[in-house]
Length: 178
Image (tube, rainbow, N blue to C red; front, side, top):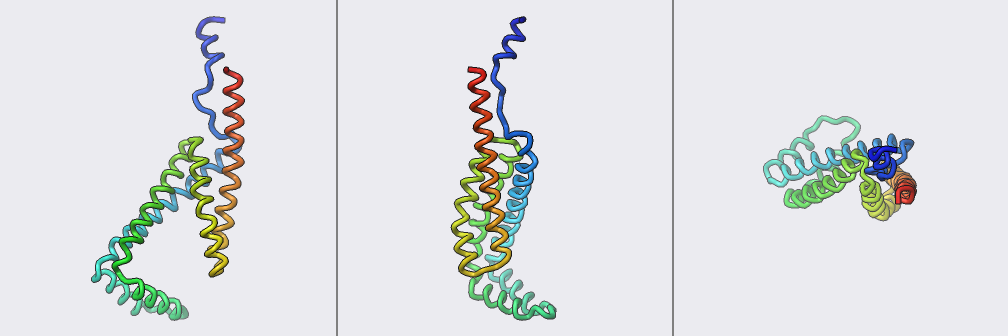
């Protein structure tokens, strides 16, 4: 063997990503995280816009005069909740939304780039919210809350399996070359 062939034969791979069978699943989760990021940025923009009394009053006025048939109860509940909430708290809502947008953005971009750390980062971040989602679902049941809870549990289980398989592949590659 030539010197170049020997070097190539013993050099460890630059990176061991998730098994090919899991790349599509990771891509779907990454896109989901990016979509959540975009939505939260939009929520933050709206919240920062509503912190001004004039804008807040305009929204309430618009909701009060919105011609919706068959959904009046929901509309008046929303108007009441907004008036009780007040414009001053929207800055906090915007900051929390931006914080979560950064978290979900890091997860999504890391998964899209095939980074091993992103798998565990997403597991930890998503799993840390499951107790809150469970509490909320049990306290005030809603099908959307239940779907989010089940979806996040499925994501955590799937990513743990992928990350453990990736770790085993990395270990095997390391053992082969050392």
